Length: 100
Image (cartoon, rainbow, N blue to C red; front, side):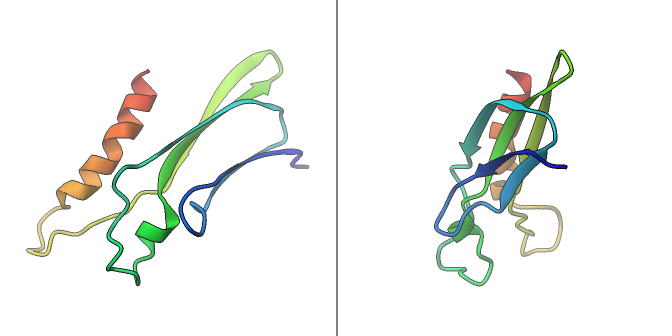
């Protein structure tokens, strides 16, 4: 049975992210990405959703376990090879969060 949850609120319609746990969640953290797609590409929905990365520290017996959740945008390069800089820029805050 799931007794605990952490809903990450972000953007106009929410980030679409949530962490469920049967163990107590003792700490939470959320960092919204500074780049979230483009407002004029409303059909993608990325700008309205407010993508972010979240952390929930869960107490499992006597151990603190970190659970991360993220939802990123994927921008394909128009020339067809690789991803655009926007996708890489979104992943930098995630890397910093994991290193700290």
